[in-house]
Length: 417
Image (cartoon, rainbow, N blue to C red; front, side):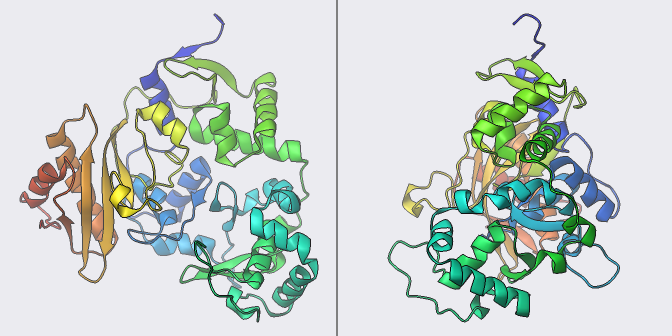
């Protein structure tokens, strides 16, 4: 394929980082809603997860790119209000459970229409076996929403051994209706969804917008993914919005045929790659950020390993004795490389950010990495309202990081154990 342009692996990595917003300096002044909108215009999705040992994950991608900001800003963009403020984000299965701009709701209706086919296990099964219950729960939301799962009046059974969630049938029916788009999340209280009708939550013009064909909607989602990634393989692009693989291949081929995606070869990549023609190509990236395990830069683990040579696994569900790095491990981005990983816990009672383990990647300078990581941890602790950072003696970077934490600073926010 002599006519296909070639990219070096470092060039592809810098393109990917720029597309995700890491080639821009963080704002030096107050971060406002305009900054958040610019990040969302790039990455589109904030994945949601229930684990709160460090921070709710949907807040972290904005912090990684913008630095300290008021989390209330994001909450405001996600809130349904009766006043003049227009809701800008809504919750749906975009990647996993995610916050996405409301304008994407019509683009995801093809998935809603397939709930009876594609919803997972117990949700799909209950809808098929007990459609009357599903309609009963829908009527309840229509008449009494916004509604918590516990307000359906259906009793919760005793949890069976090995079950992750103790969902009762009312909750399962709500989740099926949510997948099908017949109800949506009005808001969350203590991370619990309150369900209501879309016409009472989403802007009227979104609810009234025409439904595109499946192919048109999926092509647009692939365009969004291509812009967000800069350069990517077809599986990368399809995973961004979790398209079925057969349809992902079709949509990518169609965008190549129309000239909207440019085939390229990337040194060291086994699979064909595709470049978004307008992607920035910086010669240098000087980022410094801790990354959520669910950040769009790293959430597709094969891509993370291909871009950064960084093998990454979330070990939340791994038994503690078998964990290699820790419970909630965040990659540390420095320049254009992932140079370390840290297991973090916000000890809110003690008022400190605990580094449960710190590990340096092969080829990185531990002294330099520790100094930069200590500074980023100080910024992170202050953003979380914590008074300092405590480094535990676990991991090959722990001693260097402890020394960096203990070093005098102009604005000390750190301490060491």
